[in-house]
Image 1: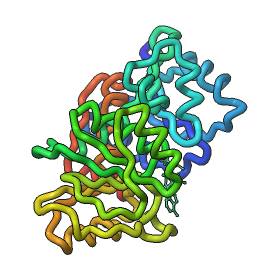
Image 2 (image 1 turned 135 degrees about the vertical axis):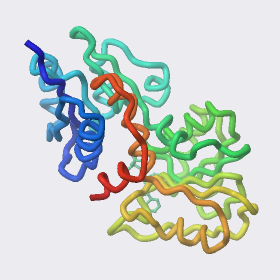
Image 3 (image 1 turned 30 degrees about the vertical axis):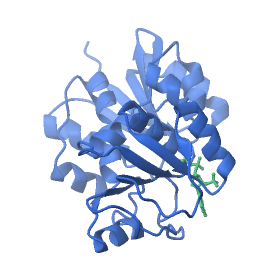
Length: 262
Ligand code: ATR
């Protein structure tokens, strides 16, 4: 008997996740059987739930806040990038073994397309999202400066990944500016950043995607800077999981963005 492949996203809360829409769109666009479901799981239950999923037909799952570090610890095998980032967002069940990967960093880079010659990056924020972004940028050979409200967190991250620390509030002047903080998100204050020292042709990107056009991106556009919104990172980080669990490469087009924004 053929089992319909299942996958899902584990988090708490998880109801806001756009991933079920994304996977449903790709499955339907490719005419593939399968389902992808939101799984609200509390930390105390994480180990038991993950241990049970393979027998239920799950090929793997995404993991989101607040379980990304705990998920890493449950895996039998961890990819080098997940180990370096210290978090897992993609678990694959491989004959009973849990393989943990972190695709946030490559999703971030894929969303930028190519780095178009950027050699320096200024990263705002030093939380979990910043870890994946800084890892990916350093891996791509950029010099990275990290600025964070709580400077000690920026220092810790800079030390792990070979970056430098910039004061929070300093005018960025890098080829690439990345916001990894929650500022600018719906219900949050806008990011207080002065773009006047950014070089011509610089790229500004925000990992916040609700709203899609954040005050940071609007301010960058108004100065003639190039911008990339954060939705693509969400789409691109999902690709490796989709390929592993459903056996096909998903399409990345405007219809995908519309389906997710719904
Ligand atoms: P995530 O895993 O999504 O990155 P996080 O670890 O809570 O979440 O990190 C949130 C980031 O947004 C941090 O860099 C945080 O700065 P602090 O380390 O100083 O807390 C930043 N952030 C959140 N609210 C902020 C605010 N009002 N002003 C400045 N930075 C803020």
